Length: 127
Image (cartoon, rainbow, N blue to C red; front, side, top):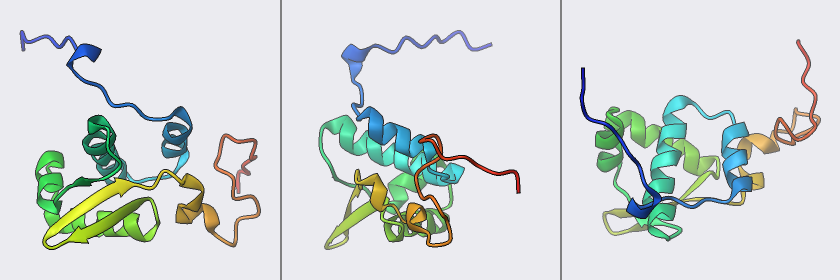
C-alpha cells in the first residue's frame, strides 16, 4: 500500500476557468486524448494566468505518456477544429484554448438540424 496521502490546497495553486467554457468542454464529444490535451493546455495557460503559452509537442507527449506522432495529429486536429489556436515563433509553438466555443467546428456541421450543444434543451433520438 502507498502511505502517501494527497492534501491539495488552493494556497498551493489553482486553475481558474469560466463555468460556461468548462461546461462547453464537458459537452463537446472530445476523444479521451483530446480532452487530456485540452486540460493540459488549460493548466499551462489559465493555471499561469495567461491565454497562451509555449508548449512543445514533446512536453505534451511526455506528460500524457502518449506517442508524439499521435499528439501532433490530435493537436493539429484540435487546431483545425478551432478548439485550440497556435502561434508559431521560430521552433516554438504558443498554444491556447479558443474560448469562443461556438466556433468549434463540430457544432457547425450542416447535417445537424439543431447545432446547440447537448444539454441546452436539445432532444436526442434513439436512431
